[in-house]
Length: 77
Image (cartoon, rainbow, N blue to C red):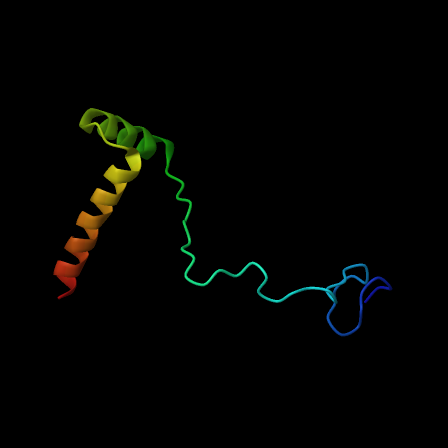
């Protein structure tokens, strides 16, 4: 341990949470929006299909995923 850390928690001495407020930014019921990163070729394909159908990429992806969920649930029964 070096001189800039406290012995009890390993945090650097210059970090002070004594005025911190637990849960200050917590929002009950808040929904997490996961960023999803697609491979270039997958994104290009989906963008092309969405354009051809006249829908947003997100709507097309949600539709495809819902179909996959239905298939998975049908097999799992």
